[in-house]
Length: 116
Image 1: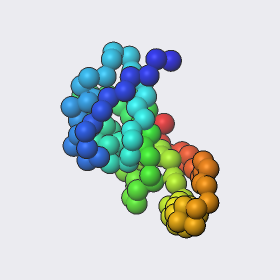
Image 2 (image 1 turned 90 degrees about the vertical axis):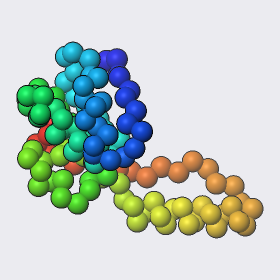
Image 3 (image 1 turned 180 degrees about the vertical axis):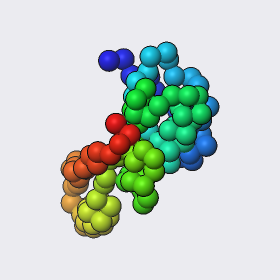
Image 4 (image 1 turned 30 degrees about the vertical axis):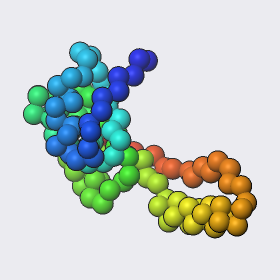
């Protein structure tokens, strides 16, 4: 696959609309940087007469409240913000006490809904 990266410039749903007009012919999936952009992408695609997920599948990121109740429900990636916050504070404490902080990974969950 050859990915196409389109930069929205903001995180707002409205920013996705113009980008959907720039998708190459035959694009069958969109992975948005957050759920707001995914919502805007789904709306723009549907206004162009494309079916989500029939013609284009859409995935967001964050599992924002309510995205499961969209039509179709948004497939998204859920992060454990509590764990991320705890690890950030622990890392800051280590840095302040002159300890080194290595790379930290926090697992994420793919929440599969009807948009894919």
